[in-house]
Image 1: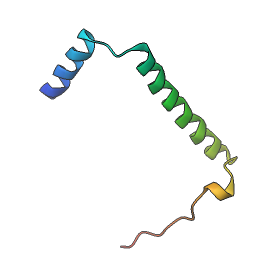
Image 2: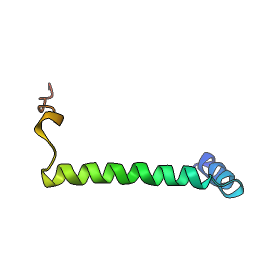
Image 3: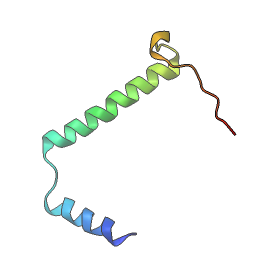
Image 4: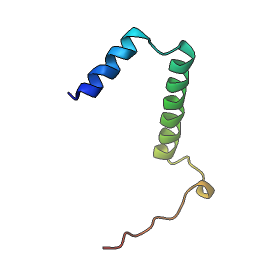
Length: 57
């Protein structure tokens, strides 16, 4: 592991994030999973999709 990661983890243990921040992060993850699930099931409206673009070689 990178020493920077170890320092960051030790700082998180010493001063953990607030409950509000943890709930916000979990809320954002939940919204992303819901949107991904709706798109996967095919329930996403056509007006909210963009046409696929071909990549140039």
